[in-house]
Amino acid sequence: MITPLPSPSPTAGVICLRGREVLLIKRGTPPRLGQWSLPGGRIEFGETAEAAALRELREETGVEARLLGLIDVVDGVFTSRETGETTRHFVMFDYAAEWTGGEPRAGDDAADARFFTREEAMAAVEWDLTRQVIEQTYALFRR
Image (tube, rainbow, N blue to C red; front, side, top):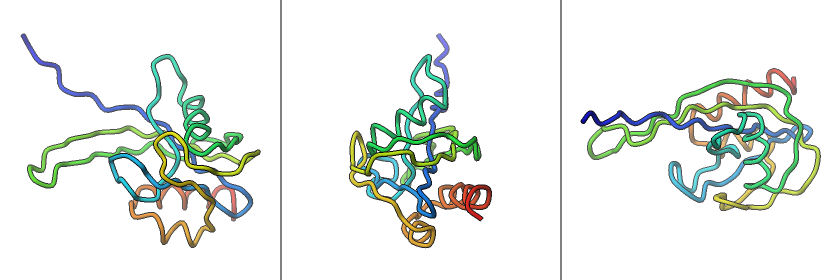
């Protein structure tokens, strides 16, 4: 019998803007445990990427938003430091959104949630791909 290769996991994330601020969560689970990131998570079977983005935003932060559009689709490929083998692969659909209500609070697998200025967010976020989609969102919607 042939063992199927693992498949990437589809996920949806949100770059949620409130005025000139962007919403970040501190990750409470791997990968990137303890790092500031965008709210988001796995797309459930039968769920659209857009619906998943808004659901994950609500579950992780308690915030409501209106989607503005797709910013980018990026691959998150994580490898073992010991073996160099790929341990996780996510295909992430990142959407820009405009805050419509709710104050951030950590929920689901987020350890913290709050709005940051653009400059604070760029300093807090460690992952280049996350900084990239935040910058793309500001370029399109907050010139």
